[in-house]
Length: 188
Image (cartoon, rainbow, N blue to C red; front, side):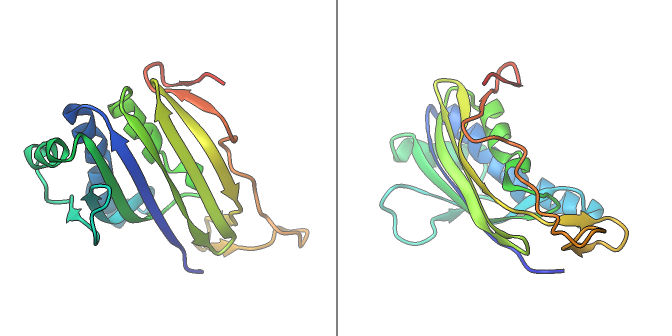
């Protein structure tokens, strides 16, 4: 199996409550989803999640152990605008657009303003996914990449199908697709 290296980040603006909700989704992927992957190997997860503010030097403050009150205080002290960064996603997924992180953020804080994405590489090549949550709608601003099929039997990457052709697929979420986090439906 080949290596993968991805990074995730988002600028989150909104009320203190919205920021706490959105940051908690990152926290969920770094704690609960990480534990789930360790046991079941069936999901994506993040590592090394940090919260910072625009202009802060260094990584910022690790969010895994922050309480809701500490996240709220951090947001209030920085004009309700924070940056969250993380290593990953890692784990079980094909395309970055399948991870679901930004959909969950949108569902948890639909009226916040979030601009972010994920990028990196896996054995199939480079992948990029960029999202924007604005005015209650999540837009997939950009998605690009290739992914090799996962061979369920030997749990290894399978570069070619039976006819010798490569098995690279296209991402499932189309560029400029718009998701309504309130109705949980694609609207365009």
